Amino acid sequence: MICVSGFDSLLRMKVVLISTYELGHQPFGLASPAAWLRREGHEVCCIDTSQQALKDHENAIAAAEAVAFYLPMHTATRIAMQGIRRVRTLNPSAKLCAYGLYAPMNAEMLGELGVERIIGGEFEKDLVEWVGQVRTTKEEGRSGPVVSLERLSFITPDREGLPPLKKYARLRLPNGEERITGYTEATRGCKHLCRHCPIVPVYDGAFRVVQKDVVLADIRQQVKAGAQHITFGDPDFFNAPKHAAEIVEALHGEFPELTYDVTIKVEHLLQNADLLPVLRQTGCAFVVSAVEAFDEAVLARLEKGHTKADFLHVVQQFRDTGLKMSPTFVAFTPWTTLDSYHDFLETITEIGLVDNISPVQFSIRLLIPAGSRLLELAEIQQKIGQFDRGKLSFLWSNPDPRVDELQREVEEAVQRGNRLNHSRRQIFAEACRLTSAKTGRLFTEPPNLPDRATIPYLTEPWYC
Image (cartoon, rainbow, N blue to C red; front, side):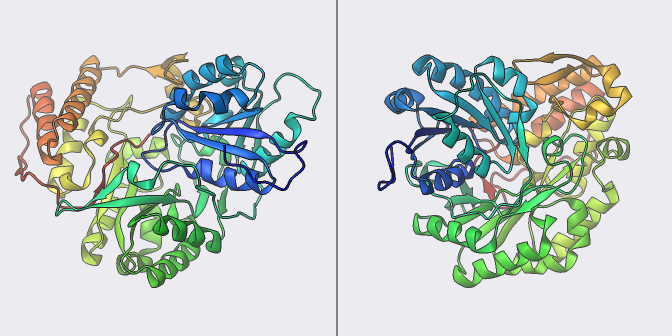
């Protein structure tokens, strides 16, 4: 363990922080609380099981008095369920905590696994307070979830002890060059209430800013560690557009060769069109935007705040500005039909975005986790089945079983294509072939298929 000396040993705790998966990035969700805990004198061991085997850290786990799992997303939480059982076996006396976006939503199941403290929202301060109470409290058993939206004064994340950046996902350029990629956050939460979004049950329309000097200091230390590209993990980089612009302008002034990527809503791209040239001029390699669908009825149900026409307008703005977009979608929903999916692929071809889209996006199926605002819809209540504890979501089937069958076929084709290192266009063409076999309809403009992508992209393909 890495420890900070000079503190009374009675106050110093041995703490293990565990991340299971964070989209192929070195986890900010370990580095930030590690800094807070070490500032208090605690010995902190950080384990990222996406890069490190839990068995190689069994001694640290066995010696720990407190173990906390970071759960920022659905996949991470599913993996963590097994990790929690393993930690409990290795160290039955350790106090367990789960923190991050998906912790409050799965509090009941986590409690059944022996997790005693659940922390959501702005977790650093509450995590420090919990660790401080572990040795002194006489109370046993778990408490209810703690969800804090307090405005924190952040400190620079402490990335010491984490796997090197070169172990994580990289930015791949059209010429085949790869860039070592770092990761940071300038804001957390979101001021919008999209029905399917997992942020909403925790933040409920609020967002919080990470101070500019902290963001820049974090990037500075990652550049020193080899980063050539930075991913901003904000749910929406333009929740605070002025803050965002100030950060990227300062970043570009200090590191003019550094590139970055961000995630921004279609709605915010329209509202802040004047900032698109700023992104382009400061090294933005691409912008991820959760488009989700082209079907107006589906967009309305999800309360996305944009229309298909809005998205097409943004696409043109990006072309005029020279920016690259990487749209994401929820391709299969309870409302998807064979024809609407065919039209979805047809639209992607018509507007020339095949190269811009990670193939996994063609197979994504709507996830309905506990606490989702989708559960407010009567039609969803009528469509869903039981809650699947293994998948951490409510089960649903499309009214047309052929749609579910197509989803499975496309998912298998995407996985096979990625395994065989096929190009995005080759995988897209296979999705089109499978769709035509189901619909009996041909695509009006079969895509021409070069072998190499024409826009930058990250080598980690998952987005959920």
